[in-house]
Image (tube, rainbow, N blue to C red; front, side):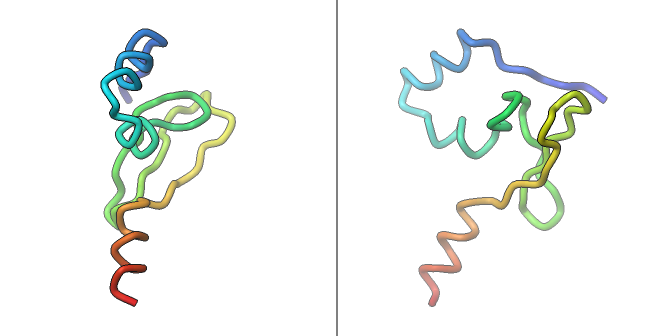
Length: 69
């Protein structure tokens, strides 16, 4: 299993470029590991050393569901 961690410099660069959306949706908020997309379109942190090894809902899917209702 390969774990890709973003450095602090990379995170700052993403924020300066205005890509907060990418950072929020695709990086674990606890360890900053890149999240893996699951079959049900959610994201999963596969970092074994992360304290919060959970699946995160895809916010884009929630927005689409709310827009349809």
